Image 1 (cartoon, one colour):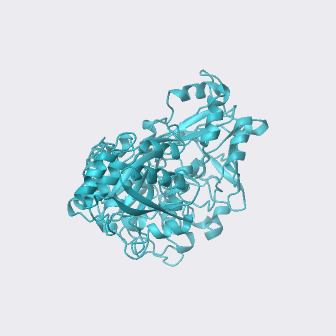
Image 2 (cartoon, one colour; image 1 turned 30 degrees about the vertical axis):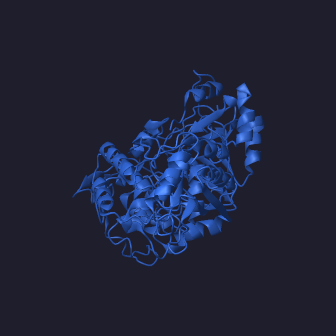
Image 3 (cartoon, one colour; image 1 turned 135 degrees about the vertical axis):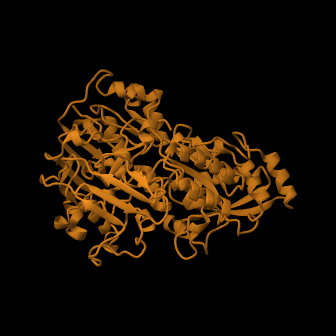
Length: 574
């Protein structure tokens, strides 16, 4: 997820519309009761009724060109089908990519620089007209228009000619690197091998848009549906979104979306405490309500855990996301690996997790990659601190580095009251490092100032809290933006915070990108993570856990490792 900071946090929260990122067992043993509570273990989902979605963040910019990922809290995927999509299953099975509009996940050639897709037969829009490969090409091309910015940037980087293309409103010729030899075939020509192109093809930019129906920036008000639901009303830029059945959608062409409810009422801009209270009470229409972006906080979770009925209505999810300490080795004393190692040993992860809301909401991390198979998770702990930190080892390393009397450093963090970079987490780190003779001064910044400072190569501090989430469940979008030296940006948003430019790391990233066997690629990503970890450019702290309530009449709970949130394309309310 390129846009870490605010955008990443939003993505982690809703898995989502966008940021970063930021994100593993989706439904663990505790959630078996949750399934049973929503109609009984043997209850079968049925069509009909209205599903209400209660969210904090508005579903803004409801245009496939402008939405950041295929997630969007699941709402966009009800309207926009794409060439491929995520497998709608619980847990690890849900981290797989599967066909959607296409007959398969893509056919690579020329060393994974060319990808060919064939559309399924019988695909139609909400008005009954046929979906063609030219519509998908046009949908992608319009995402390059400046006035429709906001989507994921990969296509601009990956497609031949993408870097200079300005969209169909200015360039009528279109992108020559996207070919449509017939109405059901589309071919993509890339600048370099990309074995994970099937993951990218899940992004909403791959949704078809009929050129004749394109209304530019107003398209979000009534986008033409290719999915099981169509937009009948969009109030205040996504504050309230009303979806009803697309009668021209056919389940025979869509194995992933169940589309049980007749209507979906998305209400956003609500206070998180109000959302959780409404879901807890589960009265009236709220009995058939869910949230895709609002977690239970520590106090709320404690209350819910003490109520058997409420506890049975909590869905647990994990999204590929890591919270960590970042070092800038260009800033003293962090240019010394022993200082970075000392801090790694001194960290007290137990206190950090308590500051993040407790073990129910955060899991300790010693690897940069999330602890999920699809990412290539390979266990390692190069600087074992135990549960409460290894102050003795830290002092030993500091002495070797010439700081026998200790040292004083500044930790930069956001003042935003979230569990990622909060003052509470910063204070927990401050207390732990004090035991090792390291005095930590805290520099708390307002969230926008914090984001601007840490992502600018000129102003990046030496020691700060950070986080990253993946746009799809793979090590590629996790490791490459942070550790590929060719992605260091001197004038603009830079995410390679350690300024690592290691030829062997860059070469391995290129080698893995050529692989179309995603299992083999995952193994290689894990090995690369372990290798990079030896340099102590980051201190992994924890992976977040999402705990979210749903209404008492909601059935068929599916929470995958891809999104970490309840999949509203699967739920039934009758």
